[in-house]
Structure formats: structure tokens, C-alpha cells
Amino acid sequence: MGHRPAHLSVITFRPVFTRHTGVLLTSLLSLLAGCGKAAVNSPVVELSATGDTVLTSYGDITEAAWLGGSRWAVVSPGDDAVGLIDFTARRVNPLGPKQFRHPSTVFVVADTLYVGDWGLRLLTLWTLQGNRLRSIPAANIVRGTLPRARDTAGRFYLDEYPPAGPDGSGNRDSAAVVRLDAGFTRLDTIARLAPLDIAEVTGDAGRRFERRVFSGQDRWGILADGSLWLARVYSNRVDWRSPDGKWLKGQSLPDRILEVTRYDRELFLRKFPPELRATAQELPFAALKPPFESGLTQDPDRVWLEKSRAPADSARRYHVVGRQGKLLGEIRLRGQGRILAFGGDRALVAEPSPQGVRLIAVRLPAGAGP
Image (cartoon, rainbow, N blue to C red):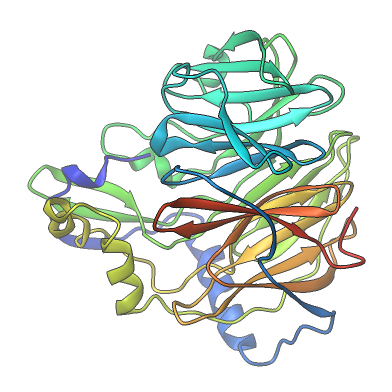
């Protein structure tokens, strides 16, 4: 979506006004007007990052899926690796050593593990023990986008973004959640997503449209029966779509209004090699952080929204939302870890360390399990 930061040589920014701008501005004004008035009336539970631990050598872990018992699959894009984690044996086994180029997604349906690799343009299928079954090439009907989920009826789901175009202007349009049949031959659009927050950038290479750093986006997930939950970033709520296509509008969630501070920008720039920081600091930044950063499905019918945090926060906050779109409670995870996935009565937490990513199987509090 747009060009990579290394290619930027920025001089000026201009706001981008589209048919969605009024919706965005109205949402932000509503949030600001309610700042300080909303309160979490549901229970607040503290969760400590303690439990069975496995230290990995991975530099990053972005996705995970439960394999049953004490076993998990994790994706490390920076290491081009997928690992099988066994907390009982306290070890990490590579899945298909050197068979991945840029793995990005992982999910489990029944007794099959699915791994999406955008570098190879393949969705590979594995047994839960780590034996490769077969692969499915990326489909041209969705311009090579790989599925992120599958329901028990065999239908795949993915998010399809509009073609960005040479200058990134296509990113101003809405994306969609798409459902594909098992043969990758027929697709249905089942939900529209909010457009990305885009800024017009003018530099040595001419005019270009770039996404603002720290801006939010809609998140979604699929349940086994084909139900869809959709967390809407501008209205800060979770809507549900039943398998028969009926929508249930969720309640607005209470949240703090967090500005993007100078320190936030500094932390962002530290992620870049020194030779690229001068270029990265010219990227457009959002003025406010979104109400949530990501969302996770907890079977059978709960959603955990990972809330935006300030740099000084000592805990990561999650709003747990039920099938009726209502807030069930708030979970606060102490430390710098974040939840990657759920399995049984455990949450898999990834915590950075100097040696690599530390994985912790954290027991969920009573009432938070399936």
C-alpha cells in the first residue's frame, strides 16, 4: 500500500479530503466530546504475564494459532520462519525448515494448520504434528491475496484492498472482507471496511499518497460457523454479521483520547536503521491514536480488542466484547507483552527480551475462558 519508507524524500503534506472525510471528522469530534465522560462499568481484571515459558531466538512474532494441549504455531516474518512451540517439552521446532520466504498468517481449522506466505504466494496446509499436506496457489480472482481464515463449511475469508496505483491514490478507497469458495473460483463481498487515513505527500519524486503512521483501521475475524465480527475504528464498536447475512450493531466502547506525542515518534524512529531514520521522520503522522490496535477471536463468541496505549502505560488493556456487541469487561496485562492467540483456558503472550521473544502460556481468569 503505497511505497516503502526508504523511497521517501518528503517536502510537504496536504490533507486528503474524500467522501469519507466527513465521517472521520464527525467520529473524532464525537470521541473528543465524550472524553472523560465514558467509564468502564464492566469488571476490570488484572492479568499477570506468568505461566509456562519458552524463550525463542525469533526477533519478532506477529501471529499464532493453538494446536491443542500445550502446543502452538507462531509466525516470525523477520526470520522467515514458522515455529511449533511445545510448552511441555519447553522447545521450539521449525515447521518445514527453509520452506518459507515471507510467512504472514497462520490459522487452524479442525485438524489442519494453514500458513500463508505472501513471498511464495502460497497457502500451505500441514498436519498439527508438522507434516506438510499440500499447497494452494494464490488466486488471481483476488489479485493474489491469501486467506486469513476458514469456516467449517470450507469457505475462505480475506481482506481485499483496492489497487494502490503508482502514486498510492487507490488507498483512499474502501477495502472489503471477501468470502471465497473452497476452489477459489467464486467470491462474495460480505463487509466493507473503512478507508485508510491517507496523507498527500509531495517530494522529489512528485505527488504520492501515504498512510499516516499510528492511524487505525477496521479489524475483523471469523467464527467456525461463518459469523463475522467487525471492529469499526471510527465508531469504536464491534458489529456482528450472522451466517445468514443479518447485522447486529454493537455498542460504542469507552476509551481514552491519546495524542501521538513526540516520544511516540521517537520510539517509532528507533525501529529503523540509522541510515533510514532521516527519511522515516518525514512520514505523515496521525494526530490521535486509534481506539484499538488489533483484535483477537476467542472461541466460541468473544472478541478481545487490544487498546492503544501511551508510552508510560504499565499495562496493556483489552476490551472483551460478546456476541451481542456489548462490553463484557476489561483485561489489563501487566508488562510489555501482548496476547497473540487463545487456546482452551490459556492466552499466548509474546514478551520482548534481549535474547529473543519470550512466549508465556498465561492462564485466563475465571469467567474469561470459553
